[in-house]
Image 1 (cartoon, rainbow, N blue to C red):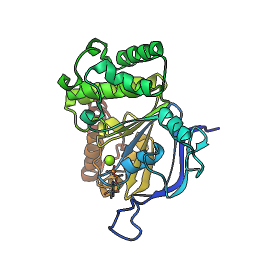
Image 2 (image 1 turned 45 degrees about the horizontal axis):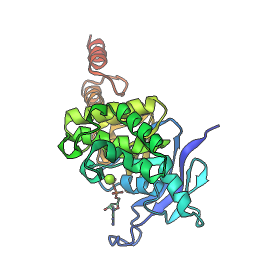
Image 3 (image 1 turned 120 degrees about the vertical axis):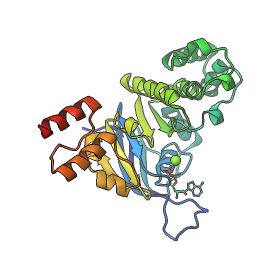
Image 4 (image 1 turned 135 degrees about the vertical axis):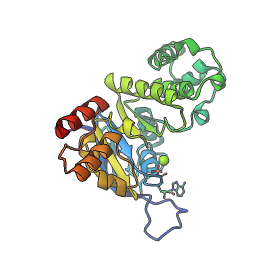
Length: 286
Ligand code: ADP
Ligand code: MG
């Protein structure tokens, strides 16, 4: 039986100051499930409702209608207390796009300690959590450094460490690699993959196809709604649909799609690494 960590049922949300059209919802009747330990990527062009969905799960915003469950608890319940909200945020951490906006202290380890301190943990426990979190993101040697002197990728890993130190069950990364250079992006993606391997539930909101293909499940959003959902191969084998949602498709899919059409080949549309892709084309053209 499925036991989702996060479950949305027909969730809608409209910003109070949203003046475009009468029924223009930022999130429109969204239902989705995220299993414990799963790695889910959420894709969608700008304004498709990804961040709003994340904020509804994290209770930064409150749904207008529909139900949201976190670890079985109805967080859209009217009688939710401040303690309940705190519990939800402890369970589901968020890492945002701009690392500079997430750093609060002038020394790395103090920054990472900020969350656990807010949990009111004893100093020994805080120390232990900070060390562990820095170890996980591979930034232990920078514990006494000044965050503002670090690279973007390093800063983002510090922000991730700060979230890990709260011991959440799930982390939602909202375009957390978007402002990084390729090296920083790789560092952060390696950290995210490692966290997931060790059991963390990961929700990765991203623009990058090569990041989304690493996920167990891909959810594509369009105009505030879930437009496509499935394994990376199920989703990326539908390039027309992705293009119509304003998205790119992985290079191997685009190439195979063109070859299939222009040369009447029938190579299955899937995400391939370049070696496999070359091999398939070679065999087909023999
Ligand atoms: P995404 O993260 O996919 O780019 P968002 O969830 O940020 O999309 O936005 C969904 C829709 O809600 C967009 O049309 C956006 O313009 C609108 N929106 C986002 N934030 C606000 C806000 N604070 N006030 C009013 N409208 C907003
Ligand atoms: Mg966004």
